[in-house]
Image (cartoon, rainbow, N blue to C red; front, top):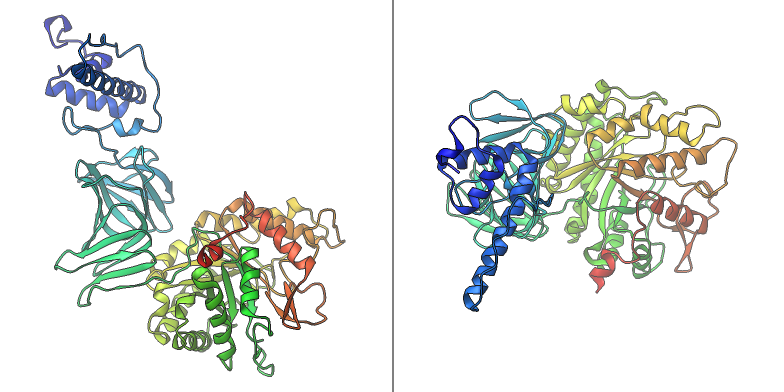
Length: 607
């Protein structure tokens, strides 16, 4: 191709470059030109991919023919066959040298918020989806932003979260990530032998063959949290290393030994289907419930939760004797193993006052400490702050949310101080809608307050809660469509969806699931069932819904129909309240694309 007939004034034909590459006739300059064209031209990448496949077929066939005498196959032309191979195309854009195998290059596949690239000494530019990253590219995220890095032809996904900075590369030795700062969540496919994924931070090095985990890099600390598989974590400045396995975490920190500890956070990437169980009412004159199971054997309660697909129980803490809570959780642990998680919950008004925050932290810590002393702390995966003050149905503002974020961070710090930093490895649920608050203004405040950065120092992860109280009304007799618009705009759920955080619908007495509220054709004059139907549709559209309804169980009583108690205890038996359970199931099936299977992690644990 480089002979005199080609001429000096005409650029080489791209198809000639492809053919000459596989014939071994390219000069270094022509190879560089081909590489440039492959980056720029998707159609040429298709052609090149197919040519590579044909080249491999010819080589295999030639090898077999060499072993068995006979005529070699006739040479096939490259250009007549131009089949697309979409799932592999992007792995053909860069080549380090002639005849070197192509390695899947890191690709920015999904972006949210402010994501930029600093290339060498050039100024930062806004990143675009489907950008192939170069080894010296520094990916920089703003507040409340995220970026997913993919590798063509494999399922590996790396997600950078708010404020993170990292570089990515892939070559013959494997994939390398330099996490300069921030949090990286990873789902890593099985890597080839001798070519692992290696993540370096300022203080540590993690070696991954295939697993699901997250890693956080700070100036003087690296934390690795493994959800699936195992990851080796080593000090960069020392000789210590540990193997961190599923549901454990380890930290490389100045002046501290490298140790592996259990991980107790909720996994919001999995559906959380929960129930509530009351330990006591808040009024001081009402004593603690002496038996949260009301005489029903824990094995019966556990079987019922399994049938419902429940994997979490929210317990309102006791303000007095802690033994009923301890006994109830002990019964669940003995009969459900690790398939059930516990969230401790409590409410306190006027959390703008430091004294009220101190009270709430104290009450949650007292209950947690009692469970820990009984060896049940592994069941506690998080806590719920019921911290909102009334807004009288008015939408919240960014200013109010900014102040609330400050109070939540302070409250989380107080709780950790009282529990030996126990909740730094657990989840915190933040009440954001209901009991006097909305999500209006949360998007701007979340970024301005640098909330995610601050909260990840206080807890493993967090989610927001929604309760159907004080939501305001669009008007009497409003339709489902009008209610949907009301929830999205007035209550700020459209803003919350863009925030990208998990949300938990917490249904309690008198709200959420009122019997017959989802029953087809039921149309009361005040239209409250349209409210519930609209909310279910809004939540289904967000695709981030988890829910907790209840109470799960109460003693037999003459509760009016508006109280969504799911079961009554009578003579050591569990009596289903049919209308409430029907609405519970209708909600569960209505907010997921496919009904949950009859079996769940509870049954797997028993097996």
